[in-house]
Length: 248
Image (tube, rainbow, N blue to C red; front, side, top):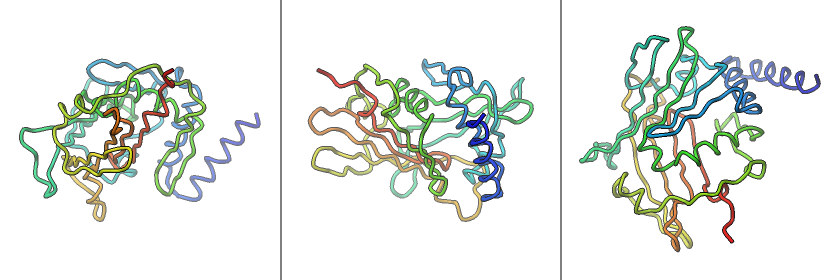
């Protein structure tokens, strides 16, 4: 009962302070992470599908949070799917040839509530399915920074996975050459730009359509050790080393 009232008070405070109920629904979704397997279903193959078994978020919440419209919308039997296409571009914003692109698909039911989020195969080259799943699961109990719209997971609370880190050659074969490389003492940081194809952007938020993706590779092993970027207005950063078991 104490836990229930603690959550209820936080939700009321959030709605009072922000005046935006989409933050309340986002927080309710965050609370569902405490019982992940009851509230979510993951299917991984050529794509990565995250299903919301007890939807809380509305399609309007994504517009309010991101200030971006999707690339296109498709009517489906159970509602509607929003497609977000990201195209690799050069420093002038021109599409790279041959074309490199990935997508997110968000499906909503007849009540306009989010039921599924699909990540395309190319995105899984920089966020492999097993790492994407464990990073999502680690959101339970994470620290929320509402001002920066960031969630910082506590990786000490999750069981590490026994898998290999992605290799640089494998990643570059799919993404192509970066725009720039930043050389640091123990790693090389590869920079990519992906432009969101969108039907509209709220005035003053034009910069959010550009996803600046940074991939960090260990100099000694050529392993991908970190990915960071901003997608649909939300910042994502995954430190892969924190999710893998130490090799003896």
